[in-house]
Image (cartoon, rainbow, N blue to C red; front, side, top):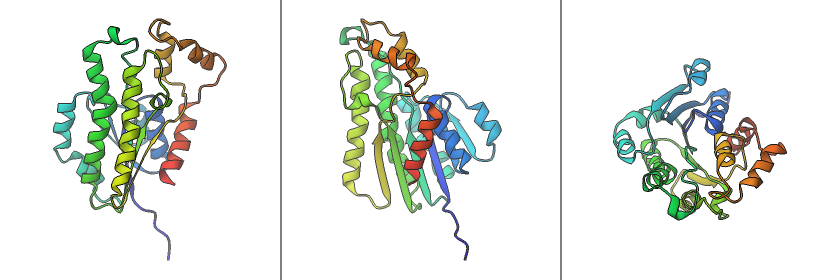
Length: 235
């Protein structure tokens, strides 16, 4: 009797650029249907994988807007019929950079909503919407900044640390068929790294370390990192 592969579907936030785009491309290349959530669309992936890629244009930093979307049927409809449901919480922002007295309240609010609120909301909604699936897997894309404090990155460090602790706590629930982890993928050559190198030394005193990583060719390529991540997620 031939062995049939389980039907796998994945939800990827921030799939339009950087690591998120590379993760979505890797999943699609393996024949896995992807629902991408971001403010814009990934036109290149849409042309290559028209039958596998669904996209929703949504500002994930707008918690009320996200809650309203999650209250609808779109997520449940996408996950219908799958045996394994994946959620990769990749979307995030680095700003505000700088000491506490320079941080704009509105930017802090957006960072917390995007980096913490959206992943936690999506995690709960995905598990609920995929109740008929045999297994659910949630991956938070974290950072070394979750485990090591950096001057000027207090908001980013705090929000990424929140994802790590969320994954630990959810794992203790031991929900049947649910696996969750928070992964720091390393230093990757993305637009976020360009933001870091553009920061002033007053705002981010350790900038020169990241300048050296780029200068010495030590930044990982998003595609290589995505391949390792997806291999782990599917293992």
